[in-house]
Image (cartoon, rainbow, N blue to C red; front, top):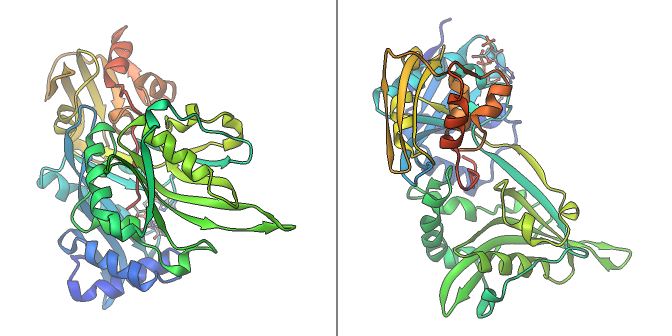
Length: 409
Ligand SMILES: CC(=O)SCCNC(=O)CCNC(=O)[C@H](O)C(C)(C)COP(=O)(O)OP(=O)(O)OC[C@H]1O[C@@H](n2cnc3c(N)ncnc32)[C@H](O)[C@@H]1OP(=O)(O)O
């Protein structure tokens, strides 16, 4: 029987999402989590694969706006909820759904598509490159101290229920978004995601709390965290599990980190998703006792190379012809002249000779400034065709801060 791809109907959401839960191991989400994903699902951007009267595949997208170097918020399809039933795997269904999605995004004028991968091996073939990474740390707070600058004097702390402070926290988060590439402007409803705290997912930890850092009554930072208390031979050995931590000024960041490290009866602070250049690496007295580990996070692909490269700015002036190789989205293939600098850029098709040959995955990987074009050349994804072009382009594509995706989707 042929498998038909159809737009999701609202009434089919439960079956569609149930298939996704099965593909991810069969443990249903907590009711409140399911309800939130139901609310956030963009039905008109979601696809179901039907085999007769059964849904055998799911594919969705969120209409995000993502911060890019220079601070613009660029429309980005956040691909999500991808699954194919075990009975129908490896017959090309994901490929079909990806094909139709990228064609749709192109038609809708969305220049970028991004995703977090269940397995990194899946998406390179569709032109996605690893665009941001994240760092996990487990700080041994029985041995590690945090340097807090004098500017933190006057900052006070208040611990509240997360929901009580959500508007103030979101306002602070919104201010931060344009300053770090990869951050997502939260669409209405998304402010609820960091508050999700179903008891079944706590793994022995407390419910979530929010600490507010204030200066003269103004919010300068916050962290949401839970406590996991443990006793070993009558000695307290608990963990502070930090869900998120944001600050509007460096002193508030350091002060919050110290606050979390000084919670009584605990000797570890765990942060599971931080930027790879997080200031904590410089604030702690002993970075080895923080066990930093780095892994992949956001995978990005230009849907429209010209629009994507023109949507960001460049650290230095650049005028370079890129020969783009893109098998999955052939409209991106060919030569593009990128000219611009810190104030803006244009990127248009050209017949001029190419300076660099670039695999589209390398464009995704370097777009936000995470990986340099020179490093990608080392992996064979970029080739220098005019001597000197690689160094100029590498400098221009850089970002002052490492890009970072603060939350999954
Ligand atoms: C953005 C997100 O939502 S990530 C979540 C993805 N979902 C999951 O991991 C849930 C469990 N897995 C599944 O549901 C399915 O196995 C999927 C969605 C990953 C793949 O669906 P399928 O329909 O089997 O993929 P399809 O047959 O189209 O394969 C396309 C290509 O990807 C490859 N591929 C598919 N799955 C994997 C994998 N897990 N690891 C490596 N390669 C893979 C196939 O071999 C094929 O390769 P080819 O280009 O050389 O022919």
